[in-house]
Each structure stands twice: as C-alpha cells, then as structure tokens.
Length: 161
Image (cartoon, rainbow, N blue to C red; front, side, top):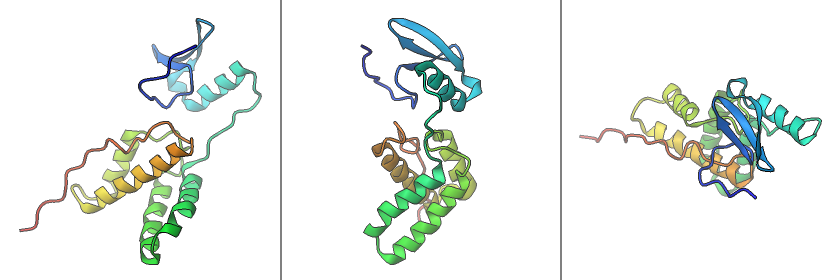
C-alpha cells in the first residue's frame, strides 16, 4: 500500500511526474502513461485505458463550478453585496471560461489578477480573496486537491497621505 502524499500535486492517486512523463505505480512496478506536454486530457485518457474504463469522467469547467458556488454562497449575503459579487464572479468566469476546474494553477491566477487589476490596488486583493474562497469551496467538494490562489502574496495599496 502506498503512503499518503505529503505534498498535494493535483494529480490522481499513484500518478507521479518523472522525466517529463506521467507514470503510475502498481504492484511494485511503474508504467509510463503519457508525456506531460500532452496535457491532462491525455493523462485522463491513459488512466481510463489503464483501469479499463471506456470513457473518462471529466470534471466540470470553471463557469459551471462558479455558477454552482454562487448558488450555494449568495443566499448568505445581503442583496447589495450579491450584486457586486455576482459582477466579480462573472468576470472570473469569463477569464477562466476555457479551463476545467482542476486545471488552473497559481500562475493562471496571477495572470488573471495582473490583467484585470491595477498593481497594488485594493481590487487585486478583493479578486484574490474571491479566487481563494472559490477554490477552497471546490476543494471541499472534491473538484480539486489544492488551492492555487492561497499562496499568492500581494503588496497592499499605498498609504493615504
């Protein structure tokens, strides 16, 4: 039996990245699944073939997860706050429209913040907080294993004089 991972990588169980390829360990042996450059779709296809399943169960894409999150989270907010948050999460959904929920990494979150916010602005901190809460919720529901926005360090806005 394999020991639990000490560092979450976002990869399925028993899958490791080695020498530019993804490998799976089973019965004390290791089998190459596919190249890392082929992407996660190829990894999931190779895993489904390895386990003998015909089709791959895909995780939902970001806009559908954001819509589900908003449906769950918004009833706890005041109506004015709901309007503002709806606008912000809509912007996030448009920016991450091409992503499945498991795909975004820290660099994707940083690119989003840099594209949609001024440097050292309060809105940059707000959007980072929205991403952190969204990915935390997704991790709690089993869509992800990590939170890529959690470790993003931002400088605060300049002090008023």
